[in-house]
Length: 260
Image (tube, helix red, strand yellow):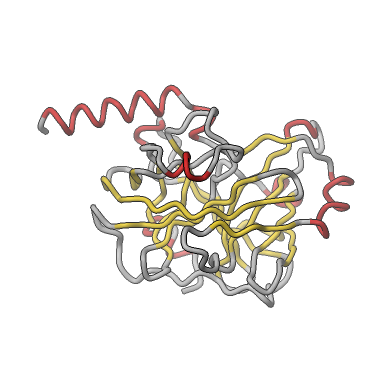
């Protein structure tokens, strides 16, 4: 291994170790089930693509209510697979009790749809330290079929080093409003996880999809080197100019649990 590669690895390891909370970036919020039930009909999505094009259908936000301590409820991102499956991170949702306390809003250009988590099809995390982590996903079943939103097509090939990949992340503006933000990233290295350069993922983006330029699913965001000073209030111009890294679970790890 040459000196440059070694230096990059050391820097990434340090960045990951220094932002542990943000690298496992579900966003902690205060929310109880009564408040959530009232807000489900008030959910809105804004599309922040770079060229004014439509955002992909099927991108979602997941509220996981903590009934024992509502101040420790959380919100993450996810995306539709088939008409009744959803993909997110294990660190966002991993147990049946969390599933039963999860409320989901799914974006479509025709308008959003809401759903609940019915069951967990498969959840997996490798439990390794952040700079060695590769696997962090949950595939869940929804309580009904989604009618208006198209699921993301699944890539038929693996992403390659140097490829331009697009992260469509859900920025959690507040408990009622979300923004789907396009981040044009570069696959700088295929290690344990996919390392995406120029990809300033923030807290609450966990579970967002990574697509290739053909609009096909290639990976699942789980973490970032961006610190907590970068958030949904940061201007998109400033944020998109940051040379931060995002980390994503390769499609190959959860492909067999998807509807192709």
